[in-house]
Length: 246
Image (cartoon, rainbow, N blue to C red; front, top):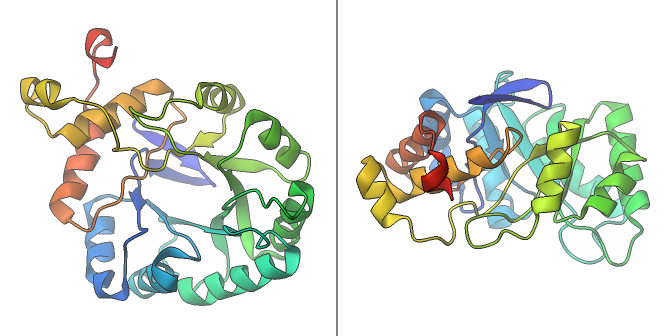
C-alpha cells in the first residue's frame, strides 16, 4: 500500500520534512509537489519561521490535494493556550491559509497539563482554523489521554534503524488507524551492501524498511535536493523481502 488517507487527504506514504527549508527554497517546494509529494511537514519554529513562509509562498494556501502539517508548542511553557493560540495564528498567516490541515502539539509541555494544551487545539478545530490534530514525542498512555480531548489523526515520534524504542506506539497506531509519522527516518543502520545489491540508494532502503514496519507508517525525510527527493519517493516501489528486512 503506497498511499494513506491522512487528515482526509490521500497522500503517498513518503512525505517531505522541511526543518532546513528557507524562503530561498520556494522553487524547490514547487518541484517537490510536481514530483509527487502530497504531505509536507513543517513547524512554527523551523528556520525561524522561514519554512512555513516558504511553503505558504510556494503553494499560496490553495493546493487542496497537498496536506501541509505544522506544529506548535515545542519549548517548556509553550503548551499554554495563549501561547499556542499566538503560534497558530502566526502559522495561518505564514502558510497563507484559512485552515491548517494537520496541526501537532510539538511536545508535551512539562509546565502545562496535556489536556489543557489539547483543549486549546480543539477550540481551534471547533472554530475551523485547524482540521485535524496530531501529537509528537508521546507514549501510548499520552495518546489515549489526548484522544479523550480531541480525535488524534497522527503521531510523530523519532523512529529509524537506530532508534526503535517505540514499537508499542507503532503497534497501537496500527490497531487504531492512526498515522505514525517517524521523524529523522534516515538515521542509523548500515545498509550499503543491501543498497548495492538492489541497485538503489541507501536512503531508499531505509525508507522501504520503515514502510514495511506497518501500513500506517509515513516517513518524512528532509531534503533540499530534488534528486534526493526522487530517491526517497522510490522507496514507495521497493518491497524488501523478509530476510533483507530482518
